Image 1: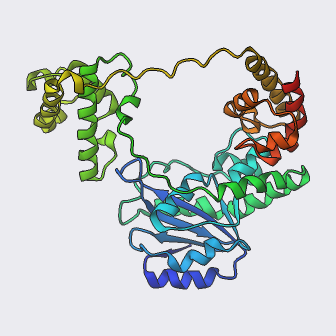
Image 2: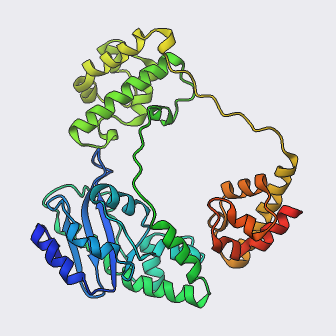
Image 3: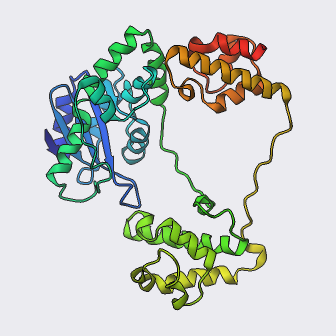
Length: 373
């Protein structure tokens, strides 16, 4: 295992990997501890060596772009989705030749999809996952974290071999390959959500003035976490933020009675919390947020409802026959779309956005029969 901490080291690594036909990839980020979930470590393994790139020390990965983008090389990830998004956002990396061991395991009907579960079942290797929530932004990295990170890619090539062989034996490799190619399209998509405060648990009973307090407190906490580069719950836990909004204390003495708000935090943030709550109390009524209303139920469609029940039953039978998880074979949202659109042919089924060719091959006839009743 080798640690790469300089631009020159990245260039030398790119030359070393140029002839590798398979490279396993993983990232370690700091979202549990930091406000911004940036990549702190990039792990790359060939069949014989493992390399760790300190992406806090090295911010330019351009020499490695050909390694990631050459479709003639296979890049093995486990549960690639978030890694791909972060690689795109932080470094502009685009991946080709993806093989995702989690997706491969889903096509084999596995229900325990964690890397440790799969490594133990297929390789007889027990991986210790106790450092999953480590602070990967700390420097220097302790030796145990360096060793832990290396383990995440060290065994991926061999795991890929075992899963690929099983997929080939069951005639499902082309199914998985279709999903891999679709996964390669994943990109980072920033989300600006002014209503995020509403998603905190325990807020449905809040009145408009309390919702205003929650909005102010939520914005204050976001700013504080951003300034300190810590996760928001490390400023104030969600439950405390909600309880502050519900009680809306107006004095320092009232702050001390809020459950979960320690005396230390109450003292540290008293002025800021009371100021945020005062802003909410002083808002004019027309500026208060209102309770979120449900979208309402769509007009009754007995034919679609009946079709959905038939589709669900057909999906479940096909999943049992194939040994696949029902929601993986076809999730609820897709079944609802089929029930609404009621395609009559395989071509019409494939024309529905999101429907894969492998789904049509696996269960298309059963689904079409269910639609027709």
